[in-house]
Length: 327
Image: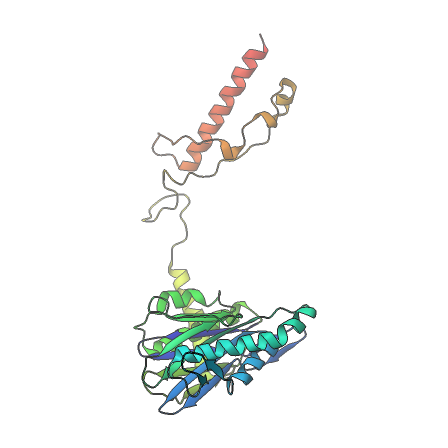
């Protein structure tokens, strides 16, 4: 598996990828998941990939020279001559479909799915920066101001920090730091994602970048970020009050009355004598169907009040039944 994330900001683009692949517990290897295509002063493009390694490598190799016939202009489009990132994404999608036509049938006979997902972004002279996510069918979607980042691979562990921090106005260095925190969270929680990491930071309208780094376990910034993030998360966690179950002096009680959230009702074991009078557990409505009565007495906790009411109701029912059985 893998984890790749790309951020599209007003100030530029950030790409971060891990390099671990695995085909079982005893087949773990390191392969880079990112390619950079650059023509300084004219175009800058980055491709990140996840999925079946043989498929992604085939697509990446093909993309450098693949030609797409444009029926509108009768031109042969490549990533090196297209005039927009949208057309570059079309070329990539066509390359994915070409590999599918060539390989999918053989993969299917071997019981292997055609599994590939990619992030493709950059800037071409004359237009704005753009970022796309490309799927196995060669179709794609584009990042927007409301959705300024894409993830592929093991995305769930690193998503929360991105959602809380990243906006289109986030500065580049802060965004790079956030991407690394997102990756650190994924590394912590998922063994299928691993070092080293490839980080690329691109500044808007530069059409080239030298802010490229490979980070391994000995990288001082990555070690500092890992230690600081874990330590400060623990400090924040410790600074939050524990739930006060017994009430007392607290501004944030956990047990309060809510008309929409009644506490659970305990289900007691049936009394043995009920069976003799035809009052087995099967005659008692399921707890899920019993509607709790909203307590009227103040000063009792919700759970205690509900339990008292249920006990009183059950005792009254048993007294009525006992009186009927004596007749």
